[in-house]
Length: 386
Image (cartoon, rainbow, N blue to C red):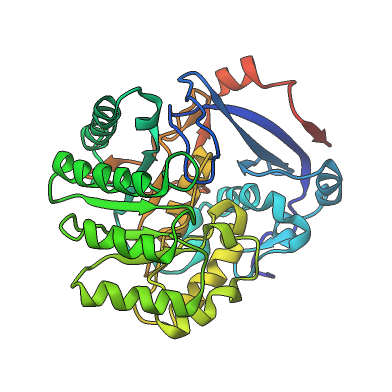
C-alpha cells in the first residue's frame, strides 16, 4: 500500500437514497398470494458519496450507519480499501464508493484495480424481468399472451437471453397445474424468441426434485440454458440431477448461490469438489467485490464453474458486476433488471447484441446528473458526516 497516495484524507461522507424506476413485474414462487404489479413504483437505491481532500467525489451503491462514516472521516481511503486485498469488514458498507473513489484518484477503471488482466471486451447480460404476470389475467389465453409480449420485448430490447420465473405450483396454483403452466410458458417463449436465444429458468427453490425431473423431461425440446435454485441445495440430489441431464442429452447448467450469499463462501466448496454445480450466483452487492474475488478464485480451481453474480432491485449493482466480470476469466452472464433513473448517467456502458462494454473511465464509469441531484436530492441525505 506504500505505492498509493499517502496524503489524501476523507473530508465528508454522506448516504442518500436515490429513486429508480421499477419494471412492471409480477411475483415469484416464494409469494403466497398474487400481488398486482404497478407501473409507476420506484426502487430505493441507497448510495454512499465520499469526498476527499484532493477534490475527488466517489460514489456507489451502499448502506451504512452514520457511525461507520464517522470512523472513516479523516482517514486515507487506501487505508480502508486496499485494491490488492479489498475492504475490511468494518467498512463493508462503504466498499463500492471506496472502489470508485480510489479509481478516480488513480485514474483507473475499477476492473483494472481488481485485476491486472481484462478478459472480455463485451460481457453478455440477460433480461430477468419475466415473472408470473400471466396470473394477473382471468384466462390462460390472456396470460400466455402477456408472457409472449414480455418475451418479444426482451428480443426487441436487444437481449439474447432472458430468465423466466417458474414454480407457480408452489403457492399460487395447484402443483400439477402450476408445473404444466411453467412448461407451457417456457415452450411458448422458445417459439417467440427463436433458437439463437438463451432461456434461463429460476424456481426460487419452489420445486421438488421429482418436479424438476418432470420439468426437464417436458422441456427437453426447448434447450433450457440453465436451471436455477430448483430446490434446496444438497450435493447428492444435485449429483442425481446432473445424471438426469446427461442421460437425456441435455445441456442445461445447474445454477445456484443467490440465497446463500450471507453464508461463508465455503458452503459451496463441496458442490464444486463434486462437480455438480456449473454456475455460482452470489449477490454482487451482498457479497461485494472483495468477497466475489475470493469466490471467483475458488471457482477457478475447478474446471467449468462459471460466475454469474445475482443482481436484483439495483441499477448500480448491475454495472458493478460488469466491472468485476471484466476482471475474471470465468464470467458467464450479468443480470439486468432494466431499471432506469434520471439522476444516474450510465451512457459510458454500451449495449449491443445482448452484451455490454465497460468504459475505461476512472472508477465505476457512472456519473450523477448534477442538475437532477441538486433539485431532488441535495439536502435530503439520510445522513452526512464532515
